Image (tube, rainbow, N blue to C red):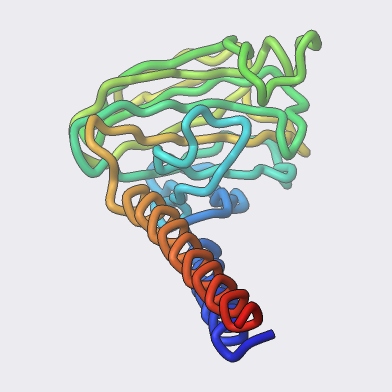
Length: 235
């Protein structure tokens, strides 16, 4: 192997290492999964803003282009409701989706969402018809809840998770009905989508493009070095 070939190999190795470091940076590749720490009090919801990512998640459509967070409820210690708060950065669409992946849902869910003024934006009982639902089962499948493509203004919102049958209202009542049972489990996806890509998704795309350009340049340099080596050996 010539000196030029060795140099080209080292350059490509270094570029690949840098590319992988960029791609594996938190919040870029791996889907954000956080554990539920809900206190069961709508006045003190768990803030999940720090968990949003652009990581690939097969249960979320266009996950690499939409920031999302997956909240994992491993099992409530006592019966109650769960409440989560997130920020919608600008005008766009939000999807709330209860899934049975990676944690199976073991009760008939219901969900609702309120704005910062306490107004109920929407609620849902059954809409388990996406890849993250365990169909054809009812519990954990068809009975999973989802609110899709809800257009929201910039601001803070609260998502509530409960058990069928629950009634949702504007504040100060908010909701009344069945509690999540003790030991209740589920996975809740919150997905934010905007008409223009968020900065994180652009970074991921540009990183991939830059990596492809670097690899192509290194390969071209290696080919040129090989051609020169063949010419010298032929003299």
